Length: 417
Image 1 (cartoon, one colour):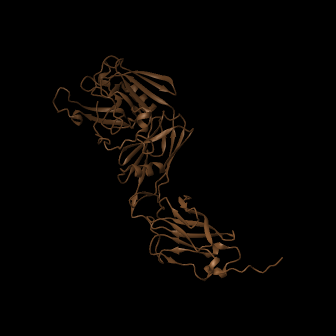
Image 2 (cartoon, one colour):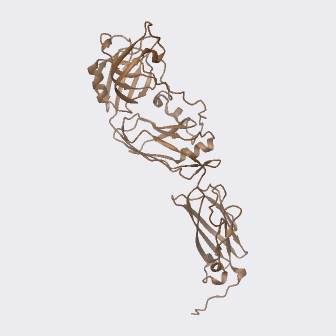
Image 3 (spheres, rainbow, N blue to C red):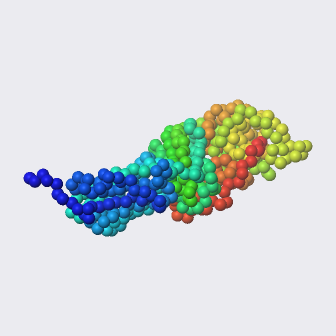
């Protein structure tokens, strides 16, 4: 065997230039000279063109790899950032040029592997690295609720630090929000307005499920020079399936746990003119004591409807002040008539039991009331009052997306009794 290396000419070598926008300078040095390459190692002919010394690449400009010379071509290019995200790109049919087709991530480091082949079919591989500049405009995302255990009706929320209105930008945000559950269930995001999204499954969460939420938007381009920022992940545990169904016509509340009736409670709901909202609500919180005043919902002091009452064992179901609570003053009407100003009242003993039994995220449903339907958004969690097909229209990733321009009205923090 002849161990003498094959002779190569400068003309037969391949030179690849990696460009990150205008104003780049070559930094291949002496080791990029074709005669310094080992036989068949075309990758040593690759020069890395980086931004000027001390600067980083502009993530808003595409990444381009070009084969210089007539005797060589690019066979493959992969570019991966520190988060493991691959940069999409397109290679020309003749192997002369590769150009990124997806946006670069900001504030990260890329590793680029360029595979080449010369006229004789000799393969080569060279690894290049560069860093991208940090973004000047960040989109923050705060996931909710807080980590903990919740009922089967608890939606996931995502609050954005900046409004996002364009459909393509919304899709980029929504695509980055990953919700996984064990057991797995079908679910979708719904844009409430330009800064808020809710996520819920098709049906209630399974009792005992584990739910994890995270964002992969960090460094990813959302819109015009707007990039995602870091987001703290979220973990939830789902408790038993607890549902309280109040029939305003029969004045009875039926409480179920995992489908089994565990209590039936006589109640009173809103009287005419103050009728309790129909529909599915979700427990928002529990307050042992609340001072409830008629002035908070527009009832003037001294009028026939005026009230100022100390209320105990108050379980909140709307931000506008609808509660399930103790109402010892109306015990004679509980189970027989509706006499409240919109809340669901019961005896102190029953209210204490209910207060201890339910948790945030549990279902409180009212049927057969003369009141208006519960709003889907803006006054607590009325998400379950939209059927699944309508819910899905609020996703930016699904056909028929709503623009969300109507949004949700500002919540009123006014208790009703």
